[in-house]
Image 1 (cartoon, rainbow, N blue to C red):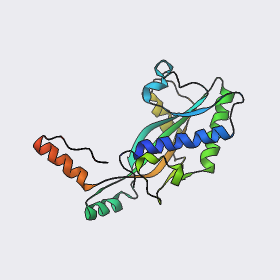
Image 2 (image 1 turned 120 degrees about the vertical axis):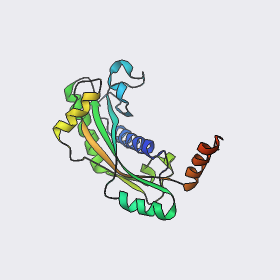
Image 3 (image 1 turned 30 degrees about the horizontal axis):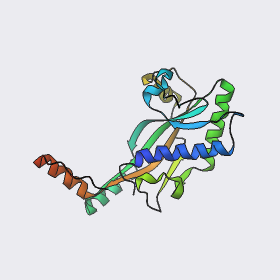
Amino acid sequence: MADRLGIEAVGLSVVRLLNLCFEEDQPISGSRTKAVLMRTEEFDIANRPDDMTLPMVSIFLYRIDLNRYTRAGWSAVGHQDGDIHLPLDLHFLLTPWAGNAEFEYRLLGHTMTCLERIPILSGPLLYPTAGWQPHEAVQVCIPEITTEDLMRTFDSLPVNYKLSVPYLARVVRIEARDTDTDILVHHMQTGVKPEVTQ
């Protein structure tokens, strides 16, 4: 299953999928649209890297929840095999950025169409860094969220509300071997730096 890099790998998987869709059919003629991962501070244009140019669609991870439907089952499995099984739901905010409203609407339409066409990430669609197993898959869908909740998300961002669409990636199951825990406990007890395992 996915290792500690699972959260990052899902974000990169969505970026790669959207960029492939944009390359196939550029939303804005004469421009190269990119999907990018964005941090909170980068909503302020003054804090964006130079290579983060318009037009673009930002992918902002604003919340991570335990998947309540599978948590109990995986806890039971972990009790039996001694490993960690952490089923997560990743909440993303996808925001179009362009020179005018018309282009932003167009970006959003292309983005939503792409994710509706390919709502399941599996196999080669999953970014390979997380050690995915062949049978693993992550569903990307629009969750039920109120307009008020969506607006409230922007209260903590350095930008006024922008047209955005929330997406949910589920279930991202992160696993860790029991030996990882043993090494950490040994380090805490002895002060000896643990060896890095792959």
